[in-house]
Image (tube, rainbow, N blue to C red; front, top):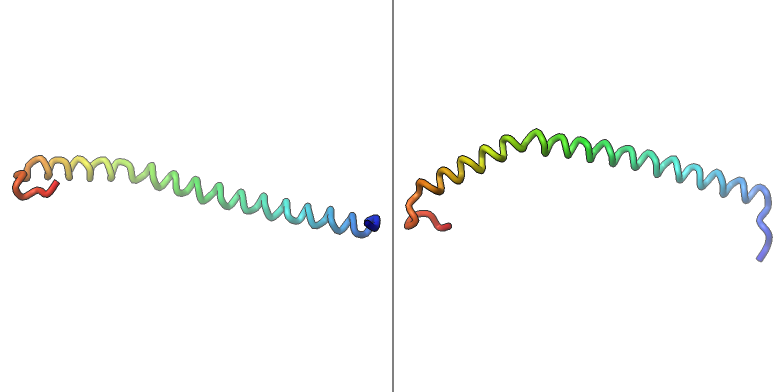
Length: 69
């Protein structure tokens, strides 16, 4: 196996650094998207809880003959 030249080694180091930069940027984007999704979920929890409460209330008031569940 031939020995790598100094130029090849420097190109490889530059390539690895470039890949690291891209990976870091991708992680930052993913983190921002995850944070946004988590904030959206937390903001919608009161709405979901109230909807569940309303549906349970409606189901309790419906006669068993009409209610399929």
